[in-house]
Length: 413
Ligand code: AMP
Ligand code: GLY
Image (cartoon, rainbow, N blue to C red; front, side):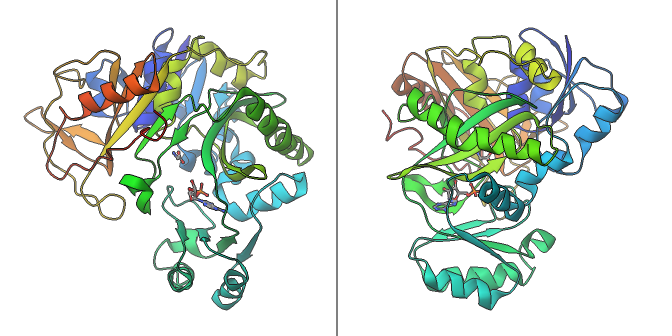
């Protein structure tokens, strides 16, 4: 099978790596780390490429209708059309759909007027949750126990300075408490099947302190997410959502990422993303026991049958980020500890390096070129071993200002 992967980050590196076990893969545009690992990267538009399967990684092209345009050319595409991608493109639309489908989620209100938003905030108890309505790369959410900080955030977001158009409306939510889980499901327009449950670590600092980021690490499987809970989420959250999408005439083919809070009154939906999670993909793909290209093709083609099978091992990934991430990352620092193939110079068992934001300079050195720079994944027989191996590897890869959490998956082992 020939596959095209669209995107340039560690998620796309992991997808391309997984697909390349059985398929011939082209990545557009890809990055220098993927190229070094032997993956074919091109700057050609996916609209000008030919393949049996197109896999779209990031949300931005999905929200902009890339899947629609590829499908209009008769191509088989993994990723929803623009109509389905609104689930991530607009939190207000998502919350309205959840209400229509009767899906358990936090109470909320949507506002473009700061005084009305603040009036609802004052009715809720802490923590206060303020989200920009549009796409903000995981950085548009504030969760705080300080009402003053929450009010200031509402005013800052609605002033349009922080997120431009994406911030012209805010969603105010009831704060939920509990363990978070990322349950990604594959959808073929009719059926939805779950992948191995994962958890990401969104805050920038150890102990879940600091600002929300795109994610600083991840692990899978997540043992608190038992098979019974997965069934409950499928039944109470994912299936009603799929029915409501179909009722609205939306045929959703791709991955639906359910961000779940396991509250004392059961699982509740925090958010939907319409693409693979990053860095969750970097722990989910290495655990696939079935052929990734076959299963993504089946979802894209409307012919999904059984849920994919996963290895009984565990995976942990640790993100190395640039100084200043998530607000103002510094680029261009030389990375040491990588070989010619972009992998560890001193290999560690079970470890793969996925490149998020790197490029090669004229001397051939890898340098930092993004807020998240590298994700280092280890697969082992237990979460504890995977964690040890991921950190053993991560400490050998350095660059000035490197930021890395030291407690990824620690509470689990
Ligand atoms: P989102 O982009 O909507 O997933 O929000 C990013 C992160 O903010 C989530 O992963 C949670 O950690 C946190 N969060 C979002 N909504 C809530 C909520 N209603 N209550 C508590 N925490 C939340
Ligand atoms: N890891 C969070 C996300 O992909 O949105």
